[in-house]
Length: 283
Image (cartoon, rainbow, N blue to C red; front, side, top):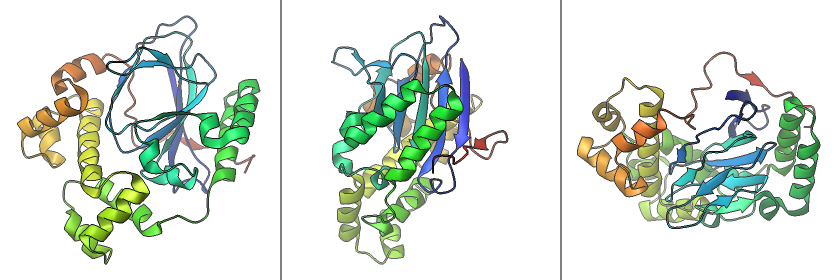
């Protein structure tokens, strides 16, 4: 399995963490991971076979060639497949609102096809993407489309700026303190946060805590469950185990034993060397 990571053009950097993707070897059977709940949103553009996935209690489904995953509460189990090849766009927390009119509470835990998000212009992009000759052309097409869709003004710039603050400081920052920093009452903050992001500040904090703890366990196998739990704001190991089970249906141990033998979606920091910026030919 080949992997790649690219920084977006500077215009998109405040909203997009990275462009990245996977490409399987010919006839390689790839055992894909379970996608866990989190705070982000991710667009996928397939030039290989689209992902096949299953949600507990439902039949397997094949994704569209272009689609969005915005997982908040319901894990998605990706099924083994051949001919994997996709470009993905990882949005920063809350940043998807800059690119679509669909409300955040509608996007959460729904699987949208690209045409449902952007209509005829989205279909045109997918057609051009399917004809692209190489990875550079694919990346430039996607980046150019998103730059065109980017809204210059946020519907709530205060909440947009506060989202990454709570995401980063989930283990130390209280909702009351955050409200005071923003010169808002707690209920006013909760109302505006819910309208903008689709979840309350408390739910966002809990999702961030969970996401950071699991990411640490996946990227650093030497880290113990207890250390990861305590460093990200859980009271103790039992608290983390209970939260993990309630969100996934598995214990952390069960998940980690299976996931560490597969390619996974927890990417390393962009501070690492070797990650380059996509040329802005289409901007």
